Length: 410
Ligand code: RFL
Ligand code: PHB
Picture 1: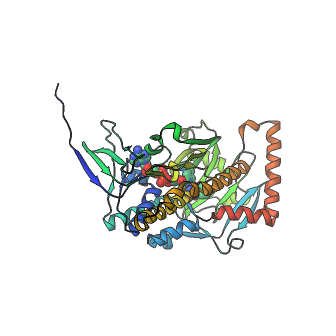
Picture 2: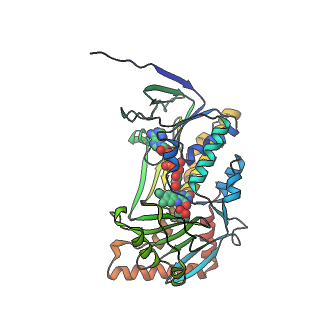
Picture 3: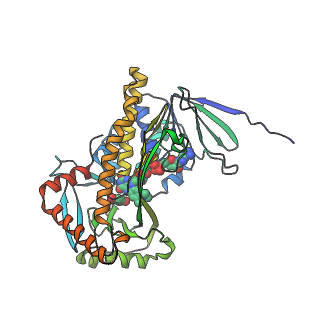
């Protein structure tokens, strides 16, 4: 039998970032700004990463970070400043002003795809190293993390038939919920907290003018709906759907007919429909892994936690994590202090659990839970409507929802 022994190409750097989603790319930009060397390793192609249609609403803390790293030109040109969001219940529309209640703080509507594209272009312009398609589709050999319980962790991968190893001081696990970093931690060293919701979101992107100019969340007897946008000519809409629903069963016509029943009657009359550019179903989940640091490896973003998208916290939490992580690494490399890395997990988890609570609460308030159908459903609906009525009429409750919606400090 003939053996072919492939030589291993070895590289070294200060930090290996696994995953080139928004967490990994933003961490890369922050580390570069601080003069810390790093390499990003991503299993997919750049086009594949850009093809995922996800977040659309950025907190000010996130846009401040993009300003800080200088990836903000298009964001300021094309991003839409939002000073309010809206709630619909019992068929009526209620606008909730955020900025007036939160000292001028606001949200920005700018798609995750655009943030990712801007960060990718920034890396390319600076000549920073990103290894895409670091997974051998033929052999199934994927990215692997090693020795993160020592001060000399390594990442290995295969690209175009060649084996690579990158030696570093730290690994940043920015590889999302299905990534390899969290999965490589021995089960005795990690605790997972999880809640799976009994419904999903069916989302449609279309080149039609948005029916509302501000992000609008609807509670209806037929279930939840969300009206969002990417620009004044591109809409992003979602409806709550069954957990086993298949996207093939939702023609555009069926989607629009159902969506119309979940917005206020005036809006339903003016809704402009059109062909969907993208249509997909996302399951809803709350998830937190504790801790977020394992020796020389740190988890950040969806690799460490997931929130249901009601409240738009996922990408913003990821930005918060990598902000804290980059500061911790700066302290380590430049000030020779371990305080930041030792504190990373606790500092992030406090904010993460606050956002988990808010996203769980907002999801519970706005969705129809299938286990409460029949007589109980009527009770649940009335309780939700009573809470929403209290919310829009109580200044204390409005302060609380807007404080959480606009984002807690990093
Ligand atoms: P990502 O985006 O999943 O990126 C992880 C990257 O890691 C790569 N990867 C690997 N690379 C190398 N080796 C491996 N073994 C690897 N395994 C995976 C993947 O290919 C990928 O490129 O995680 P990241 O960077 O932490 O970013 C998190 C955000 O994507 C996520 O939190 C948000 O999209 C959540 N979210 C929203 N967040 C907001 O802040 N505002 C919103 O308005 C908002 N809306 C949403 C959302 C998420 C949604 N879905 C689909 C769940 C709306 C929806 C519908
Ligand atoms: C979106 O525009 O995709 C979006 C907006 C608000 C959310 C979730 C998603 O809460």
